Amino acid sequence: MTDEYTGADLFTDALEAYGVDYVFGNPGTTELPIMDAIGDSDLEYRLGLHEDIAVGMAGGYAQRRRYHAHHDDSITPVGVANLHIAPGLAHGLGNLYAAKIAGAPLVVTAGNHSTDFRHEEPILSGRLADMARAFCKWSDEVLNVEALPTMLRRAFRVAMTPPTGPVFLGLPLDVMLAETDAEPERLGPIPSAGSGDPGQLERAADLLAEADEPVLVVGDHVARSGADAVAAAVGLAEATGARVHGEILACEVDFPTGHEQWVSYLPTNGDLAAMLMDTDTICFAGCSTNTTLTRHEEALVDPDTTCIHLSDDSWQVGKNQPADAAVIGDPGLVMQDIAERVQTRLSEDVVADRLEGVAEVKEMVETRMAGSGEAEGDDPRASKVQLVDAMERVAGDAAIVDEGVTSKYAMLTRWDLAPEQYISNKGGGLGYGLPAAVGAAVAEAQRDEPRDVVGFIGDGSYQYYPHSIYSAARYGLDLTVVISDNRNYRILKDNTLHIMGGEESDYEFVGMDFDPAVDLVKNAESHGARAELVETPDGIEDALEAALAREGPDVLDVLVHD
View 1 (cartoon, rainbow, N blue to C red):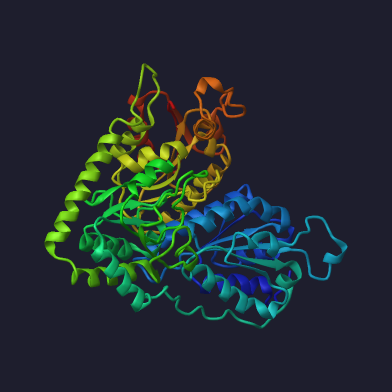
View 2: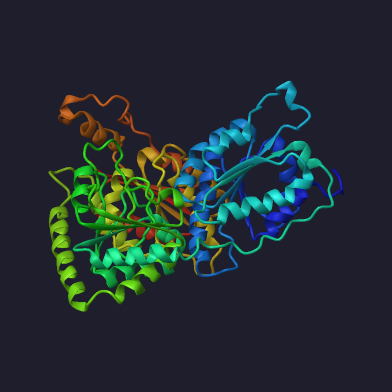
């Protein structure tokens, strides 16, 4: 015990100075100086029973907190996670990947052995910065306490500067114990991606004005840029008369789904996606995952299609299709500018003609989707559609964190989701959604008028980290988890048929069924939640209403059929 000011004290003081309230983590010996300093600070520690849970909680917290920051400049929308040396960081890499793809601004740290001890290769050793580098915007290690203030300031700025994402810093034991008289450096304002190249903006406006049937494909960088960016997407669609779709694997609400020009999210089916993008001109706004799960035989976008790309991430501009206009900048500012330019080029009659075409396509898509996923036969379990419809009736305004996997598209196609209401697991690796829902509940609890938080999690996803519920119970979080439970990895069965062909009866589906089934109710109760099995459709609404009315975590295991 020392009264001297150390690197660990400087670390916690910097977090407080930068507006951090919570540190998510799972501690170990090399983190003990940090744990001691947190105990003497105003920071609150949120324990996860696995490092990947801690990173997932920090990611969900950051994604939800970013929405709050769009309306309050005083909020720092960064999730902070502290992990335990090489194995702990390795445990956290799955959800570090998920945070990278979701663009969640995270500062992830891990303790490490003292710098003068590593030559002996002690237990738990590893090259931490190298391990994390593939999943981070910046990954490094603080080797001298005097460098700590600058490197921490840099970490926060890199995480929050568009395109946002995770950073990693290794914090050796001797650096955290070292005495220092350094102080946290001021963070300073975080820049936007800017308003774009005027020449490319003019080019984009010309191409949209000259188009016969323009299509606007919006991606999740739009939602990340704020509610104003979503409004700018509406403005661009209305100015151009464009048909609007969400990118393949969209995981946020980038355009109001109740708008008359909204048609659909693009499906992962390559033929259907290509059909919807079969037009003369497409504007890809803030897209990043707009491709299929597996190889597609034909191009998703015809090589002769005129493509306009705009994004705050230069890597995404012209990545999978040539860009005939390429604008790097804040999606909201860019779309607002293009809309203003287009308005001077298009007559009301042209826009009206285009809107008639939009209505025709929308009617075709709605007709094709009608009845999809509805209950068939006499199976007593709910269909995924019945589950989603019941959830919307009861919790229509809730903040949703989704990892329903094969249930996701029932939610996206039927629920009239609003901007800032929905996040999903954009990275695709299972095990992010449940801890992210816990993190989102932490973020909502900070608001004067918190929204209900509902985690919509597939049973396969839930079983990755069911002990995430312990953290929700330990900290008294108001969280309701709805498990869409078909007792198998349905996505793998669907993909087997897609890749290899044939009928379900042709396959044994090795390792894809939960037989015997896991008792998810007892599991959730063992971690401190109230839990209930819902076996039929008529029990869903009452169970959900009761869960939302109670404080604390509730888990509803709802049986559904494929």
